[in-house]
Image (cartoon, rainbow, N blue to C red; front, top):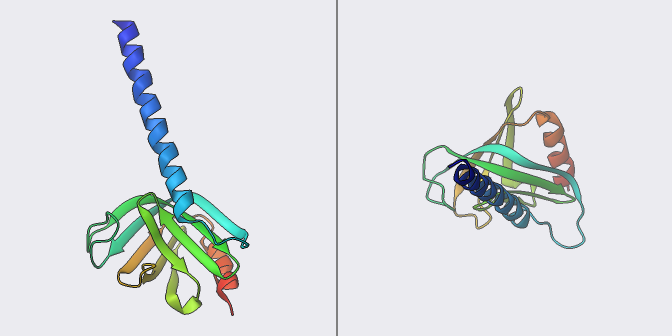
Length: 141
């Protein structure tokens, strides 16, 4: 009886670890930068609350969707993605509006990479001022 419990427990732990690993790999894939651009700032496993105006990726429209995301800032480009797909791919500072709501709270408002879906992303991040500075520096023309 105890052995079967340990077997089931180990299978569940391995399943959870593989799901976490696959999610991390997918976030990295969807936030990849073009060749020749090195990332200046990168942060993984960010808790995000995503609100979209119409169905996008697997997000429900006009509802708060909670996911883990990854943000990568490079010279002239910012990529934000999650395991479901790319959320933002910003190459111009006019394409996004960034606001700091308070300690450890930041909001990014913009459009999907296709430009068809309006997206609002609320990030829970400790160094929100540093991230805003890095994004502004990367997107300045």
